[in-house]
Structure formats: C-alpha cells, structure tokens
Length: 226
Ligand code: C5P
Image (cartoon, rainbow, N blue to C red; front, side, top):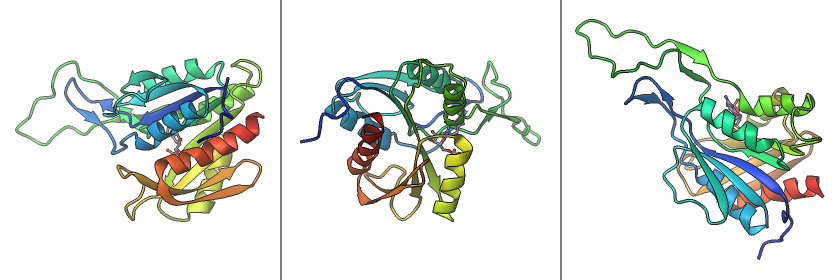
C-alpha cells in the first residue's frame, strides 16, 4: 500500500491537451492522452489528498475520489487552475497546453474557397505554469500557497540542460523532464523521466508505469510539504 502522506493536503492537477478553436467544428490540438495526469490523480487520492483534476479533452473515466473540472482551451484551463490553486498545497501541471491559439475564432464554419487558403494568424497563450510562480511571488494566493508548483517538460535533445533552463525560467519547484520518442510518453502506459528540483537535486525515474512516475512526484511533493 501507499503511504497516506498527502492526507489533508489539497492538490491540483492538470491533465490532457488543450484544443484551440478555429471555428465551431475545427481546432488546433495535440496528442496528449491525459494518462500521466490521471495517474497523478489516482495516486494522490490513494495517498490521502483532496484532488482537483482539471482535464482538457481527456477520454478517460473520472478517477474515483477526485473533483474533475473539464475544460477545452488554454484560457479555460488557466481560469480553472488559477482559481483552484488559490488555497492548494501543490499544483502539478501535467497538461499539454498549446503555446498559441488562432487570433480569431470564426462564428460559423470556415468555407472551402476555390483559391489559396487564408493563412491562420496565431496569438500567444498565457504560460500558466510561469504565471502560477509569478502569482505566488506576488502573494496573490493564500499565504505561501501553493507550497509546491511542479511542471512537466517533454524534450527531444539536451534534455537535462534544457530542463534546468526551463525550471529556472518558469520559476517552479519541480520539473519532470521526459525524453520523448522510443515508445514513451504520448499515449503509452509507460514513462521515464528525470525530476529536477529548484534546489539543484534530481531524481531519476526508470522506465515503468505512469503510476511509478506519479508516486515519485508525490514523494518529492510530500517531503516539501512536511
Ligand atoms: O514550455 P513547455 O511547454 O515545454 O513547458 C511545459 C510545462 O509548462 C508543462 O507543465 C505545461 O503544463 C506548462 N505550460 C503552461 N502553459 C503554457 C505552456 C506550457 O502551463 N502555455
């Protein structure tokens, strides 16, 4: 069995991938399945936490014992995460958030034209992870909340160097860095990662079920909350 080391703790987890609407039927999206975020939610419930799961376009059943908030776009995900984060002990951002969204969401279906298609203009989405750190620094949440802010980063090359730079840039406490490819990460039951901490320490999690990586994240979160 798992330790009940998150009993009485409020945790917020984002999962899945955002969809950025072009018109009523089309969107820009990504391949995130939500499996890692759901594994984080299940293991946190098992360890006694009060879990809010913000799920973006995930086709998985609700994890028992978690409060699930379903969202579609990055802006909706941001609103849900920021409001749930206000009195949370920890926030883990496992969702794949689109960096950009179409500048215009057309009210009716974009028509096929005989000539060349119109280019799609994009605008930047908010970086929710970075914003969580900024807001905590500014004292916008309950005092010293969330105590732990964690992010995920999928990297293809210079995994550790890029991960360390991202941890510093985003101002989070933990960053779970995975190498993408080789049957890992997207849509697969397995994951492998290095968890980088702001204090310079790092934990290597070998390839295994996404629950194992989730438990390794909660080990580090629980240690920082105690
Ligand atoms: O910069 P990159 O997208 O690699 O960072 C990934 C981490 O940042 C993830 O934890 C993701 O949930 C978060 N993120 C975010 N808002 C964005 C983009 C990424 O919170 N607009």
